[in-house]
Amino acid sequence: MYAGHIVESGRVKEVFRQPRHPYTRGLLESAPDFDRPERELVPIPGFPPNVADRPEGCPFAPRCGYVRDHCTQSMPPLAEVAPGRLAACFESHRLTEVLA
Picture 1 (cartoon, rainbow, N blue to C red):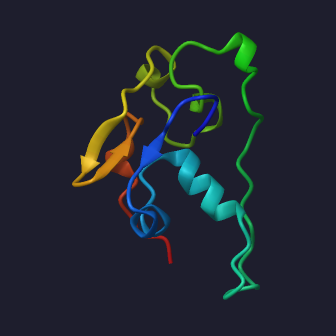
Picture 2: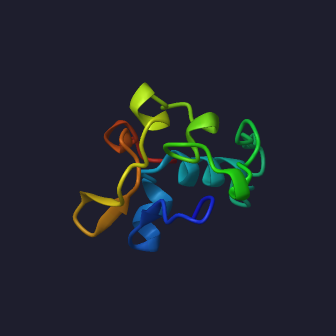
């Protein structure tokens, strides 16, 4: 969830291995990996939105590295991006690489 919206859903193992929403990817990249303590943590840029004054469009757009004009104009629907996987991202097709 991000700013009160479900942004990704799926089997835990699949979501952790191949996140399809930029926020999910950001969370995973900013968390320590105890199997690889040398791995540098990558923080999510920017700040969470004020939920009392939500911007138009995707609430993650101001912090997203995949943002496009349409992301700031309308909220992406939670849609199937793979069998059993849902993501609320217009650009989820661009997040197909596997996290190692």
